[in-house]
Image (cartoon, rainbow, N blue to C red; front, side):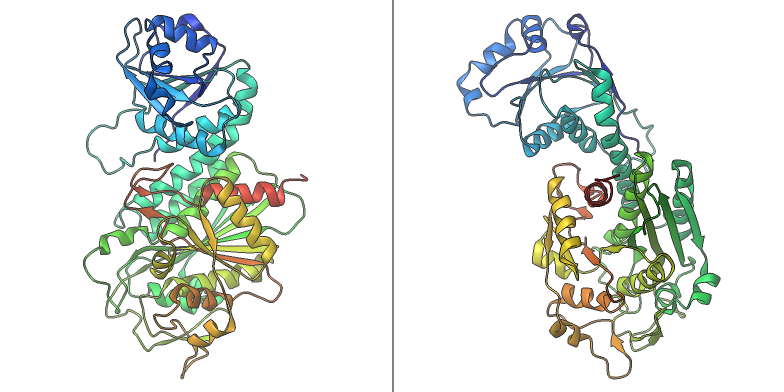
Length: 490
């Protein structure tokens, strides 16, 4: 698995700057004011920093930009990265600068000289998050990730405020690795094994096998996986870091590969369906993050792990399956399988844990990409308080989320002639009718949010915090939600 870069915090040592290898990143204000460390770098590089800040081009630079001076004379470093930030820079400016440094950072490491910058931990967080590459399937020997060394006035205090962010970054990397893994590697069994290993982080993990799922009556979930040789499973992860209060339940769709089943997808692009377990990956990463930073809250994560394959035993269009709730479902399209997985896991979570609230995450519909592109996840909810807290948490950490509507008119599109409900409601408002299908399996008075992450879980162009591919969207948002909603008075 991919580990984030190691971060060490040391006292200021101006003499060590000259012999630092790799890259040296020095913060300089927008007006060109230099800290003592920046002045030392300027002297060592024979005035290179001052020439930059006094140039006409510097005035055209924005706060958050990074200017690289390659192979500076008088220093052993390969490059000086001049980070343009004011002492009180915004979160967005810190993210932008940190992400640029994360992209530039190599295996030789980075010496960071933040000076008097406030919220340096946010700059470090962005560096770590962007410095990611999935290499598990590369045959070349992987080069070690470089170390980030931070010279600061109070190393112990800086480490204390940064460590929780680094714990969450480990959760993000775990999610990215899961989403990036090919389906022949990340089978349902291997996925469950990796989640079971999270017990080392302090989680309580339980794997429910097919015989138990049959006993529980999870006919919808089992129908999705019946065409595959890989056994269907439900994995329950518990973090009991709070008091006696009911937990928050996080539910994830874990379709390790989605061919569409008998309603077969087109061949072009089907290889991307290794990411159709993105919801389960996000829940797993969030649970790991909460455990590593020892969150003072009770949270339970449940994921349904299946593979949707065509075979002689596969679910057919026109089949009627029975959910754990007892509702019968007409399966008009076997490619609308994620909701069948989620509805049973959601009902089980409510039945067993009686949570204070429930959030499900899934790469559920292509329709949400048409509506919101790759910039925002779609959020659907029956509870304003929970929804507002969730979207606020997501946007505060730079993960876009946008609330979408629900309503009886959309639910009526799911009417079935032969069963209690149809699993699809036609092309119009496809992401909303999918949410309304799930809404049917939310008990009365249960605060609930459904997050459709189809457009943000894995992308074709790099984002602020991630290269092309898996983003880990949602781990930081969920962690922030737990902090603000459940830990504020702990």
